[in-house]
Image (cartoon, rainbow, N blue to C red; front, side, top):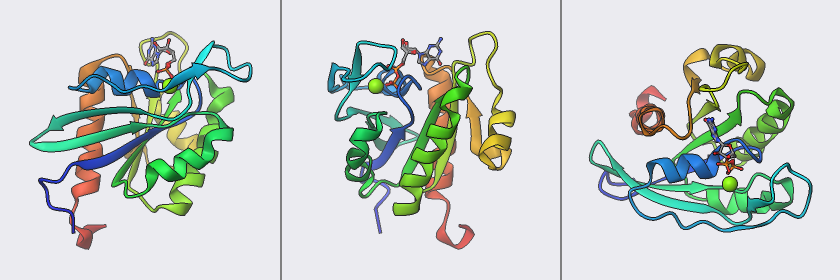
Length: 177
Ligand SMILES: Nc1nc2c(ncn2[C@@H]2O[C@H](COP(=O)(O)OP(=O)(O)O)[C@@H](O)[C@H]2O)c(=O)[nH]1
Ligand SMILES: [Mg+2]
């Protein structure tokens, strides 16, 4: 069993542009190790994460290690590498990009079918107009509403709240799982 003192490994995944790098950078208390490179396909931005973003923080006395994954399918092997030993997963999707929801659900299924890890879906860009609200995204994903959280990935309070909820799920005694 993992002792509460050992860093808890959490993975942040989701499609390109979901806000993964922003999420890790917003909350990390140490400089984020980022691995960006020029995008090899047209994904709407020049640079994208090719290996991972790594950040750390302490939340409620618990040390957390955050690993943000790449979003492109051709890096799906990295999802498995990064999820090895992970105790929680945040699956992000941009709330104003419904065209990405199917991809987001595929990533979620890819990961959770290999590693049965507690997860929350984060619907980013809630600060933008014309954005899906988390309850509707929950319907789309076929998940209970409490498993889908809206956030602005650039807002430390939003990110902290989401992680606190994930921590509750993750540290819940196995007897209640
Ligand atoms: N307004 C707003 N912009 C966001 C949010 N999350 C991410 N972004 C922006 O969306 C773009 C893509 O985010 P990024 O973190 O690179 O996505 P990634 O591909 O998942 O790592 C960046 O320009 C971010 O600043 C959000 O919640 N609200
Ligand atoms: Mg990124």
